[in-house]
Length: 309
Ligand code: CP
Image 1 (cartoon, protein in one colour):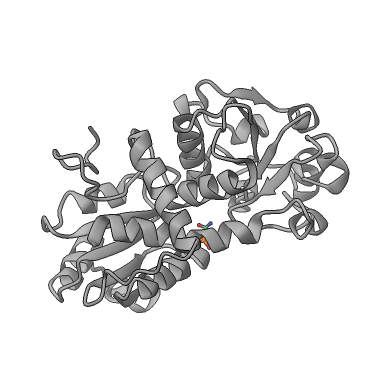
Image 2 (tube, rainbow, N blue to C red):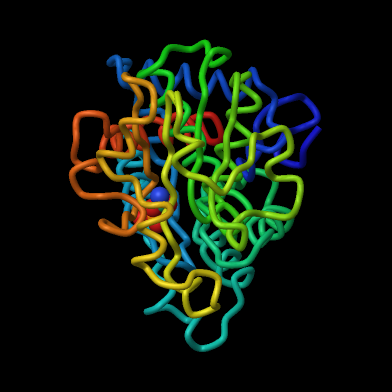
């Protein structure tokens, strides 16, 4: 039982995919697919939702806004850079302030690991939180939308798939949520590849095939998930140069030829074109990047509906 599940088994918050029951995860994907297939719904009319982002975002924030609007909710957008956060107000005081205005749903992004779970522990019983990314810990709705995109491309049975995740896995909340979801859905083989300095030394990759050789890891892969190189890692000395990184871990069209003939390419965005992925691959016929973005709206509708409707 995780803190995000009520004693009666109902989803109370969505904080992580770690330990989320497989039937709950699959149910959210089924609901998102039904929304895409045309099941119209506006069950959140009169409900107020706030996107509470203490860290930058384009697609997560906007797709939650779009999702909430499509469900009929009223949406309040909090921008930390123009808020009383700049005067020293804490995240919890900020949340309680907005909660006092009658807001019942919060979509929260924060730079600190565990920050969203801490906030969730302090809200009223009828307030729900969604983790929109905390530190390098979790980005559960990105994990869900990636699984929905994979299901559409490869079918619901993942047992025969080889999925390769490449890049800065150590600092990636997306990679953690993706690995948890891939495991939960019974993926045949999960490979992880990146420079040693950018691979985690905890249990994140338990059960995965880990390698530093991108060309070898690509052999026969059905799905290639590229991760953003977080450029601050260069300043930390974890990456020697962008050119070196591209040479060793950049996905080019020629390299993609090593993967399975019908392999698909994913990237959570934002992309560093010419660093971890070349423009012709990102925009090419194997790329699912914009499908991932489109699926994000339906997945976030399914999550908000499950928590608040
Ligand atoms: N994938 C993702 O979380 O993108 P944003 O940072 O733009 O929300």
